[in-house]
Amino acid sequence: MEKNKKFILKELYVNDAEIELNDKEVIVKGPLGMLKKKFLVSELKLEKNNGKIVISSKKSTKREKKAAATIAAHIKNMISGVTQGHEYKLQICSVHFPITVAVDNTQGILKIKNFLGETKERVAKILPGVNVNVQGDIIIVKGIDKEAAGQTAANIETATRIRGRDRRIFQDGIYIIEKNGIKI
Image (cartoon, rainbow, N blue to C red; front, side, top):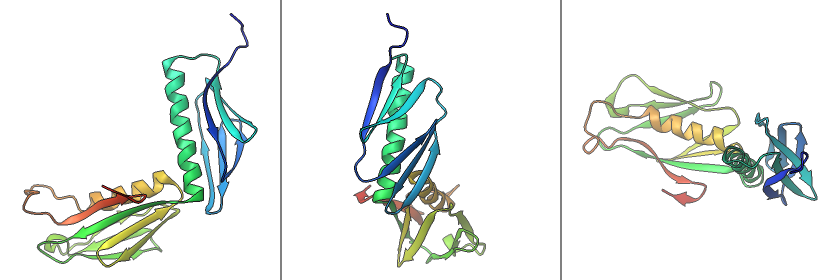
């Protein structure tokens, strides 16, 4: 067996975005912005050949294949983020008390008032690089980073989680109803 043999584990074709590779760091630029991410997997090597990204390794075990597939998925999400963006839609459901939602961009939070008649307002953190708009009973979360947009949507949903009450009766809350145009 050859000592310098390498196995190509994944290949990604890139059309719409510009990609730079610096050691283990991937920089993706597109019409909506730029994303930067570092992949600290020592066994894998990232290369750019003729408009495609090649993820290779000296070994071809399950561990390397799984890590290569994970890195490929992250890069695909980065490419779709800088070309199309990621969007989450949440719906405000209030059965008992009308919920009031306000976005505070200076502090990076979403304020939820009068949830189940509570006098104290609940707060959900908005991560940097994510835009949140409230249109009636729909909250739209947009961003180029899928992880940041998804975490912001999850923060909003968990801020209205009900504890100690029957969920079948107390259906109030804010729920994710759509991810990137796909209804849930």
